Amino acid sequence: MEARPMLDENKIAIVIPLYNDAPNIERAIRSAVEQKVPDTVAVEVIVVDDCSSDEGPEIAKRMARTIPNLTFVQQAQNSGPSAARNCAIRQTDAAWFTPLDSDDFMLPTRIAGLLDEARARDLDWVADNLLMSSEDTPEEVERVLWPDKPEGAVRLTTELFVKQSYDVDIERSELGFIKPLINRRCLGDASRPYRDQLRFGEDFELYTRLLMSGAKADLVDPEGYYLVRRRGSASHSQSGRDHQRLVEISREMLNYPSLTRTDRRALLGHLRYSERELAWWTMIEAVRERNPAKAIRALVISPLATLHVIGNLARQAGARVSSRTPTA
Image 1 (tube, rainbow, N blue to C red):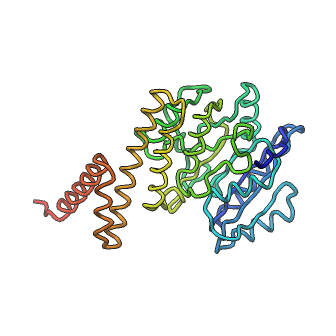
Image 2 (image 1 turned 180 degrees about the horizontal axis):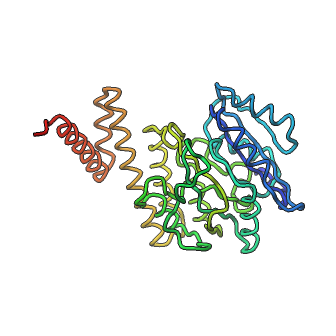
Image 3 (image 1 turned 90 degrees about the vertical axis):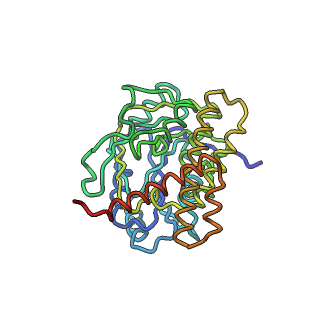
């Protein structure tokens, strides 16, 4: 068994995976290296490029030459955001880490605020309600991630987190988007918290696994993470294979020991949701590829998923008919 690394409780690593995001990477890096923390705390920023084909890596490398606490790492092959984050975490002895997406940014006081919250209540990890903006006006807050969040700190349980990650009324308000400050002491493998093979849903999987394992976590009011919604972001570049992996993960979670009845109900709900998404994405790909066999596969994932696909197809057919009907 590999020995657990000696970790520095007064060091925080901000990990930034990079892939073809030259327009935004400098903003993300500057927001990370300019964090204002107490003199007793060190911040290390690690950018891992996942084989970009644009100027993003050169921008990050140039910045790393002049910024002492910034490290740049180049992946040998494109492996996805989970593998990139794990690569960054293996470069550091920081006890705390937090992910930052290359198209997002933070206010200078955010990390210090999260660390204060975590230490005050002896938390394994802490997250804040994110500030949502758009790429056209990134500094203008449109809303928060969870608009109906109760004021103050909310203790995260498996049931609450899982339900709030799929059973939502507002698009892109799922708690799977949060970017916590995590102490590596609560990880089974402190050097590889993310599942390398996941390119979609990797955050949801990690946070759920930590909560099921008994991690103590809170969601607090906004500390200053700006989630910038943009066209073509990774969360919208999905495939049927990505959803297949998430369905497999959801099924695995239902076998986790010591689940409560309410935890199991929430996880089962997430599995049914994931199966519906898988079925629909499989049908989309089947139509694009003109692949009848794949279309059949989309219809046999589960009865509820089949009804979901049929309902979507019927709505699309109805919309096409309506658009062709001349008005009086």
